[in-house]
Image 1 (cartoon, helix red, strand yellow):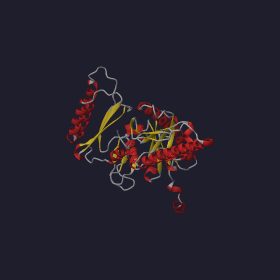
Image 2 (cartoon, one colour; image 1 turned 45 degrees about the vertical axis):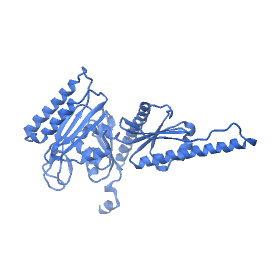
Image 3 (cartoon, helix red, strand yellow; image 1 turned 90 degrees about the vertical axis):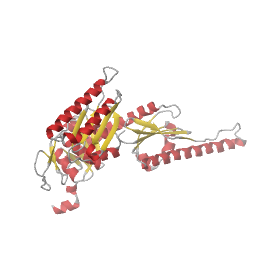
Image 4 (cartoon, one colour; image 1 turned 120 degrees about the vertical axis):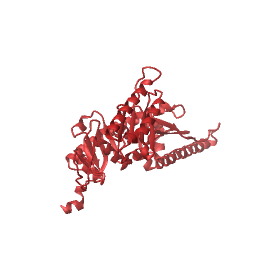
Length: 387
């Protein structure tokens, strides 16, 4: 499974020889049990890549990786739920292989100076570690989830005292026992909160809680403020009976719903801020300027975005169109067939959220790219005084 640390590593990689290989394999429905059509497709992609490399005079540098890709293809056995990713550069001793949910736009193979990240744009926002906890007064079960991968960790059970046969004189013992049970339940919920806080400190970013309505207020009262802020939703599953697949399905429903709402709210906020000349940037030129200034908090990218541009290998400046010299430092530029890969790489490397939109008319109207800004450098006090 691919993680954010892996994405950062891929985003920062560069091959001076232009031999960084990106292989995306989206499985189809096999026509027969041998699954030979998958191998045939992979071979066709490798042959086409080799021909292109030989035309450019650098086929030898990537041949080792391409041969290894064929070995990977031979080992695929038609798993229709998983897509295969390989990022490799033999010259740098680099090979990374990942299985992800089969939601790629198709199978493809690229060889360039940078790894091709655009096909991952739809998944980047989901590559987040989510904790799911199912809680009752007696039990707590914890799950770790990234994309569709979910594992159950160690849970715990509270030792609540049992009520005796007699409530004692005047019911005193009954009241005492009830208070004792409440104290034990509170301690149990506090343990849950402490575990969740620890999991956030170790890299989790979202929390989904499953509990009955009548205990939610008691549990919530024992959660640290930082933990409460990370709760993105609740599910209604029985901790004693819920299966792993049921937890996965319910958690994915909550995450998908939350992402859809965030897309809608964020687009509305960005467009409104842009109209007010505030913290919204729309269109490629404005977004490029904001990225370079370090202003961007979230990058909004439409599935139809594509733009030819140039990159300066000396200072990293990006520009739309084809210009032989960098406008920032005068160094010779390198042409990019699609700026999307570098934009995604910059966002990943700098911890900028990437929000991907499919078939969305609002982002179509602004060139399929926009950004929510943390600040506007041209509106700072220093900038205003200088003007």
